[in-house]
Amino acid sequence: MHEALIPLQTEIKTFEEQLPTLRTKFPIGTYVLFMGTCLVGGFATYSAALEAGYEKAGTKPFLVKQVSKAGEDVQYVYGLRA
Amino acid sequence: MSRALTFRMPIIRVKIRVGPVTLRHLEKGYDNRCEPWPRSIPKELEVDALIDTGASVSIIDSSIVEEMPLRSYGYCPISGFDSQGGDEGKAKQYPNYEAGLVLLDASGVAPILTVKTGQLVGHPVGNGRFRAILGMDVLKHCHFHLDGPGDCFEITAPEPLVEEISSVSVAGA
Image (cartoon, rainbow over all chains, first blue to last red; front, side, top):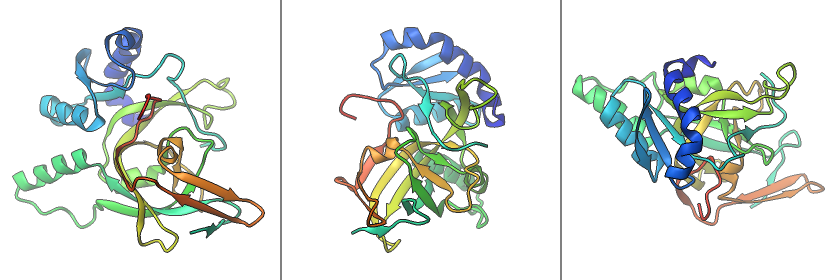
């Protein structure tokens, strides 16, 4: 795991486990906010989700992730290698 | 206005900005401590960026993340770069950061498109010619015309300001 994501590993694991359910609960494109294993809520914009994250978590880790369509979980970037 | 290709690539000048929510909270932190914003920490950087229609998301070089006070609030699973090869093409998770973008015109002065908030992936671009990649999340808001025989390209934006760019396909967004 990338070192920048280590503080978010609980939130990432929880999001990935809950993604199929989140797709039924929220419209595609909704930004969901997780703190630890807790789903704080869904937001229409990235900014609103970040603001809520700061309000609830302050400087502690929180995850904001957009709910995608099934099959659109992965992005593609060609021609680069680390 | 058309621009010349650089080393046969469409490269443009862009400004990368600390995202507005991150910036507001960082500034508030300095204000609360009665400290000025440190001169050594830029709120904005100007870099060259490759226009890449083969990228579904936009990337900024890791060095930009290190120079600016960006914080990761999320991740993006990506297939196609260092996940190629020994890992059977399995997607890997990369951090993304709240950052704004300003695409500049051919003179490198006037903005053609301002994105107030984007979710940009941080990754070593590892190329001396550009430090960012503009993927389809940004290009969705542009008209891009490549004139290969003429060694030039043109990029314009029908709307000069976009509040947010989305990393997933959403009808109407």
